Length: 289
Image 1: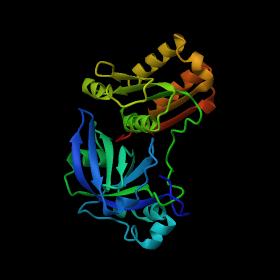
Image 2: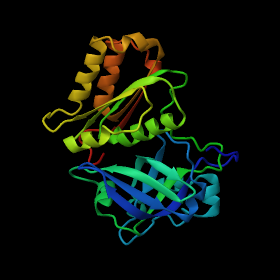
Image 3: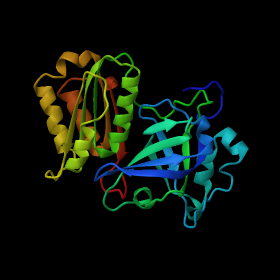
Image 4: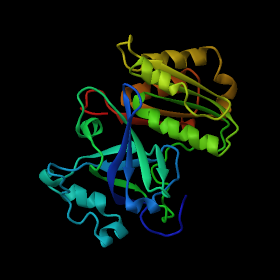
């Protein structure tokens, strides 16, 4: 839902953990509740949010985060940047998995992985009642659809590819397409760490004419190798050529992998760059996805 007021599209919401479900070896879904979520935006698809995590002692370093003037002017980021490191709460970007303003609920899927940083530790250790701040869409704002990259326009054929960090965005986008009764066709190709992750994704909700390939890399050391192999096969077998002029591609995940997939589509398939949206959600060698 997009509102009518000319106010910032995103605002801070003080929220608490109200539920937690382990989905598979690599995924956990956390439910957040807030009395303020009555105005939470529901534009859907791959819309991003920011999650601010508490400092030691459940502390928020910005004393003006919830000042009415700060919220009205959308100043949370400038204020956060101006803080010294000791008072700067860790902030990470995630995808809205589901938003329900009537029930005052928001769910986010987290990836569990080795060597977690602040958000990974939070996902592993959080309990009911733990506090966070969600920087999310304001349904009252005409700008509430900020942070959505999945914009297929009039395309009738879609290809979505990514690693485990792209799963929440792909799953949410597929559910939105199904709700809007989108009538095209498409492929979803995802590489995940373990076999039970892949099994979970095989039941992903999609429009009727979609094919989902969930590939695990338990026995493949090189990240992204299966995505490249599957994409090359689609190109070589001509599966994408017949829809090339009406194809929209969405790629997300580790930066170098996403770039290599885009290169294959441009050089081997001859797809126009304007038909590809690609996002590096994380970079190999960084501490946290």
